[in-house]
Every structure is written in structure tokens, then in C-alpha cells.
Image 1: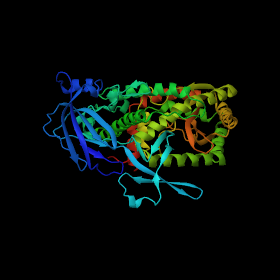
Image 2 (image 1 turned 180 degrees about the vertical axis):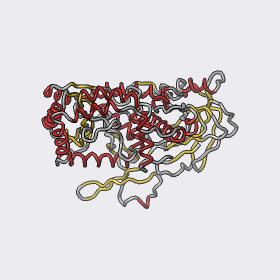
Image 3 (image 1 turned 90 degrees about the vertical axis):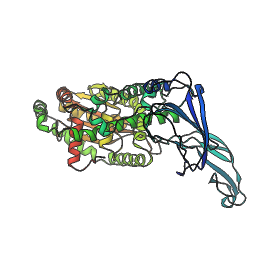
Image 4 (image 1 turned 45 degrees about the vertical axis):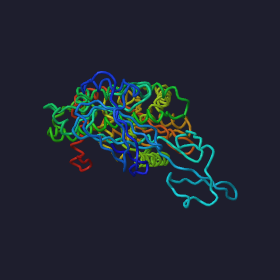
Length: 510
């Protein structure tokens, strides 16, 4: 058992309690199923001890034993987990609370506030300083009463676990929920390694979604689907321009689930490259689709659409918004893990969805185009968002988690609708901007849908990007044919993308 301080150093000393669940002995699978439902009050303490130098060894635990651990120390709230041992050697890590002291010192014109480590000596404190008594506000907006000392939970601490199964985080109710959706199973799953996953793969190429939905990890997709539906409902209830914020514990659980999904897709990527040979483009029958695309290129208005897209992409307003978006993505990559980045992107997308639908409804009415509004990307059990995250690890989360499609009858209608999108964004107000535009008609391909995709951002007065979504403008003939190709290519698309990017040297295999 390891305990780490927020500084990164091991906690010098702590007390450890080993807990045994009350009731009859359980086998490992039964313990896993019932573990999340039992509260810690039902457990019996069978051993205690004082630990030093941040580590403690518990010996003599048989494989398959259901146990609980509780760490107690003055600088942290009691941490407790429950699990079943699955190996001869297992390890669990905990993080302390974030604790520091605040001092105030009177100076001409006001007060100076100093922060110091809990163990800092008096010689490092400014002369005349006294413990601060008052109120402080955290970056998340939470207000705390301070009497010389600040203590916050280390919500972003990621516990390392080896050799244990079923470790749901302990809550007062005994269940783990996010926006009301019970998801204990997804948090406590033991995910397969690439080597294990390789044995799960069939002879023919299959998509990560097919493999995941038919594996013992299928609860991940089920729970994530329910969470996305609940997030969409909550996002629609938010006041205008107010972000969707989850309590720290629920956000941490959501990050864990998203990270588990990304881990599974990454393991699939590595296993698939060893298991299957690359499926060439010649193996896909895309002839009918490309014929339709070539026919559409002959329509009146095709060249005007391409010219308009180029002009918009080079406009000063779009270039400025693109720089804001790139800066926001860089900051996110610096501050958060992969799971945290995508989880926060989903929260923003859930809030952006009703705003995007309102904007597109106005545009559809003005341009007489057909509006198609879907659920958040991934709500149908799709793993596409995780695939895109793995492929574009350095470019941030996908931008089309929330999206609407405007379907047009001709290329001239496509141009009219694009003009309507530009006018609709302009009339909405300065807080809305187009940050990017991709012309899929210019270089048609069966692997890149022929449509125009516009990235729309909502921002506050400080130019901080709050929400982001995508508006697609499509041709009805191409869209109808693309649905058939989408179904035919679903099983091999991600595998081909990984193979192609690996050949270009843009994706490494870990």
C-alpha cells in the first residue's frame, strides 16, 4: 500500500486498517458483484498498523480474498477501497488531501497573502505575518472558509492498481453514480492488456465497438451511453451561456470511465496490428459512391461552394477564432490527462448541443434545408470518439461530439445554406464564431465524407471558449449513398486508419 502527498513525496507515516466484509465467505466473482453494494459500515476491522516512509506491506492474503483497506492520517480524509486479490503480489496507491497554510501580512495599501507548506518552519514565514482568517475562492468557484489552513480533496489523483479486481470507489450510499446513472461496474473493471485482447479478436477484421460490446467489458459502453443521455438532459436545462459542471467526485468517475474506454481502444489498436494484415482500399467496393460524387461535381454551384469555403477559411475572423481554439486545445493538453480532456469535452458538448440545435433550426428555416439532429457522439454505443482520441492524441478531443446536419437538394442549395450559416452565426452575436471550415467536396474520397463541416464555438467576453460543436452541410444524394458505404466500412475503418497513419509515421505502437 503506497500513500503519496500532493507534492509527489511519500507520506512519512500513516495508519492502515484491513477490513473484511461481514457475512459468509464469497468467491471472487460473487465478491465483485456484491462489493459495490456493501457499505464500509458492514466491514469488520481485522488488522491495523502504523506505516512509515509512505509504504506498508500486508502479507498472508490468499488469492481470491475479498478485502477492504482504509488509510487514516490527519492530512487526509479517510480513504477506503474494496477489492478482490487476483495475483500473488498486488499493490494499491492512495493520495493525501492537498493541504497548505495561508498567511496574511499588512502592507501599505492592503494585505499580502502568503502560502506555505504544512511543514514549513517559522523562519520561512515573513515577519509580522499571521494566519489568515477569512474566505477564499477556488478556481472551480467553490468558496472555502479559512482559519490559517486550506485542505482540499485531491480529486485528480489517479490510483495505481496491480493484481486486484473490482475496486469501486467508496461512497456513502455504497454505489458510484454520475448524473444519477449507476456505474460501479465500469469503474471496477479489470481491463485486458494488448496481449490478452489479441486472443479475443476473430479471424476477420472487426471494429473496436464490435469487440467491446461482445466482451466482458461491455458494461463500459452501456454505462457510458446512459451517462451521455443524462448529460444531454441536464445540458438542456442549463441557463444560457452557463457551463455544465459536475461535482468533483462525479467528474473523477466520468474521467475514469472515459479513460477505461480509451485504454480498451488503444489495446485493440496494438493487438489488431499484430493479429491482422492491413485491409487495402481495393478490398472495399466504393465504386457506386464515387460515381455519385463525380455526378454531383458536375452540378451547377459546385465551384462556387469550393470558392466560398476557401474564402471563409482565409477570412480574418475565422483565423482569429481558430487561434483561440488552438490555444484552448494546447492549454487542455498541458493540464489534463486523456480521460480528463475527453470527459470535459463531453460536458461542453452536452451544453453546446441545445445551442447548436437552436442555431441550426433558424438556418434550416431560412434556407429551406432539412435539419438532422442526432445524439452526442457515442450515445449509440459507438467507440468513434475514443478512436479519434487515440488517433489524434496531440490535437485534442474530437470537435464533433455535438453536431447537426443541414441536408440540401443540390450544390446551389449547398451554397445558399452555407451563406445562411454565415449569416446565422453573425446575427447570433459576437460570442459565437466559426473557428474552422473543411471542404469535403474539394477532394472527394470514400474515406472522407463529401460535405462541408464548420466548427462553431461559443465564448464569453474574456475570449474563453466555453462550448464547441460542428455544423455539417451535405448533399442529399451523396448522403443517401454514404450511409451504405458507412455500414460496409464500419468494421475496418479504424483498423485502416491506424495502418495508414503508422505507415506515415504519425502513430506509434506502445
